[in-house]
Image: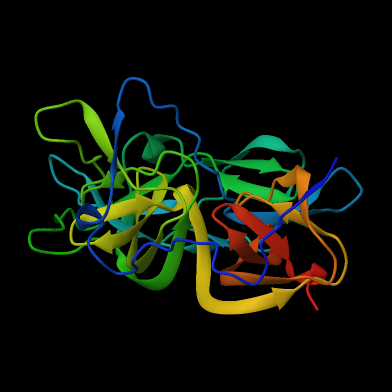
Length: 284
């Protein structure tokens, strides 16, 4: 039986402050030993099925990381995006790409230099970066990151889901409670203003405070736009991961308060409660 939400056109959401330091907000301590990682893995690109056993890749990916070089080379947080548009492959699942890009002023480093290649995962029309390339200065110099903020400028708002919402430092290390093995976790449903993004160890991180970053897979990029939307017909509800609710829906021709919108699985959605979203197709 479908259960209809019974409160309409009222503020159902307790929206966390946007733009403040994450460690100044209400946080939750979680055990490093017991917390399961339930992050939502988001695609890096897409592909189309050509119908002849081949598949064409689309878009631009950030699978080439810049490392500092030198004796103790480490990630700088910067990636070198490159296009895979039009590239054809012969299978789905995990695939090895040997057509490696080149960049002026950089050279491949580490094991990748001996076997120039990287892996992608193709599934359900989406492309995921499976392994990444490492590039260092071609002239043998070392990139000094002292007093430099990693990554590049990037403006968005991320609304966190129900997974592991840990906070990371500029070096990509999880922030723990001093003297314990516990990590600090941000509350599900809270929204955070982002001003930079970095690519490190194959993951993309968004900066939400000074030396405070959140894994992009922890949430959904959203647009803050308080409004009231009215359903056309009975409207299915979805989670922020795009999973359809099997026992809850919105009644037809009813108004609902929404505080934000997002593109989820290619579809514009409006949030009507902490982790319940309605499709724009079901709105008048």
